[in-house]
Length: 480
Image (cartoon, rainbow, N blue to C red):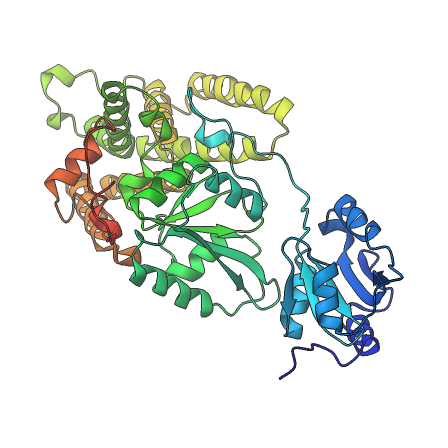
């Protein structure tokens, strides 16, 4: 049985020019070279390979008069003993390897080899803007999957750490890696992810990890995120040791952590960079802020419009200065207006974003109060709710909380106190019904696991022994 990919060098050249075009793409290089005395065809994409390494590699291939080319396959493998070299026996894989930035070689008799000297354009690892810490490493993931793997390998030096590579999508052929620790991660979850990756039949993952999330977990119109995103390799390493599975997508500077519950989305690295007491305090403040950020506006509207519900100690709540616009409409305009400001800040050049924020937040807000469009109380409580939304580490969950807050507010405006409690019940029931990767979204609150819930609320010292989370269903519950 032969391992030849082509019958001759001429057939290989004809095939490649048919696929890439003859001189139609300036970055596609199809060159006739020699490895010592053996003629080969070298193919690579100029913008995706390390040109210096390739030049040094080929410069050492000077002919040797004493060499007799007898067995071409053994000859090439002996004199082209380069890192990452592998033999290809399928033309589709051969093309994908070339388009991925690897250098491919075809020998005179048609044997095909691949050398991995990729060098993708990209930036250096730097701390992600949305996951900053006071103490801790300042490196973060970038758009290159190979570099991201190296950042994790640096933190977990264990032979059981696996990075399983998959090619996803029909045209894009995007690199997707499943990262896990072999003796810890759950095999059933891994098999399910592999199966779902194989079921993706689409042109390409243009939005990288977000596109993949929707394909893997059938998110449809659910407003909440089903995975935890992170750009920090230390957070990734910590979750791998807990038994989670990491999904890396090439061209994305963030990775997905599965399975994930709502409490995973509320964690932040800063809690583990401080003393346990301080970390617990920060965690309590965040949980409290999320609940208040969700309920503050609906409750204030209820008290402002139904003064009979207010005890004497809270009589100061309510609208002191009347406006021509109904309170409910004021709150809706204010809450949605802050979202407009956020969108404007994203699209505003950095030198102008600060000035834009000052103008929008101070000038427009004050003028709106002066002309009677808003009452001061509406501006105050809307701003507090927005600030409390920003303390959520997960940007996706923060948007979901805003979405739920608007729903509760509308229900309260229509049906009063009954609408508020019905809305809370519907929201709680909805969150209880979610089971991405068969993991309850509210675990360990629903179903209730006392010990696990205690660890969610309190940041215990790292010296205290703990089992791996039940939700990951690890093969080794006890940690070393």
